[in-house]
Length: 239
Image (cartoon, rainbow, N blue to C red; front, side, top):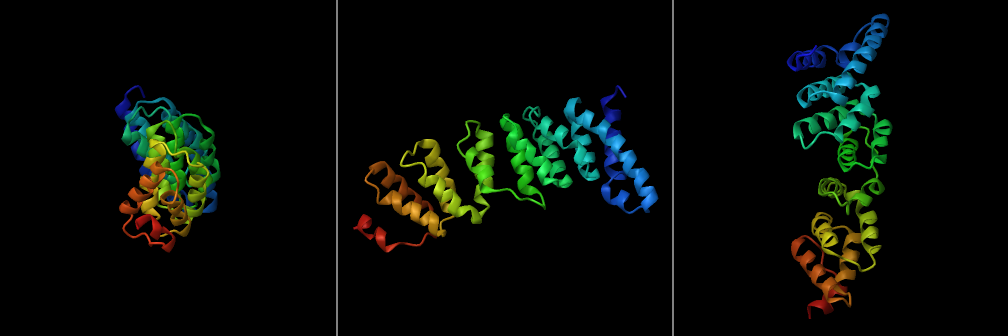
């Protein structure tokens, strides 16, 4: 239909009437018919996601997520790169990917060069029930030039305490080169993982460094981390 409002209304209706739960509740023969219909419908919805007005694309993304349509993953991740700062559309695309919950297929979005696609894909992968997101998928983006992608990587790293050793190893690999971007990363990560032995070891390397700038940032990080356990090896620093 040439009217965007009509297309949006149709997408909203499909989001309610074509959910995967409703299709799965049918008897096998009817379920097969409904799945075939969904395949046709999902193709049309994917086309809307790729090129329609943002408000219509958002409604189509919502429908695809509720339908659990894995065939639309490419369209959803691709539109992330053309969401043009529209937070409502971006959220709908990411949430649709989370609802579809196909980790391996969605992981293909990490091959993109567009930071918006990378950022949205990381958020979707981390939010999935079947998530197998690994620290090595995130670490390379902690120093991304794009601030949005950098923030996404940081926000994900902060909620994964099991990544503490890998993060500490990445910090050690900086080999003493700590610019303002890296200092900002440390100010976020170290307080969040303050009780982690690997992070504490890295912090010790800073405050006992021969470099005054490293000692300064190390002391700042201690001040930002009130729960951090004091180490006897640090005592000479405070004498």
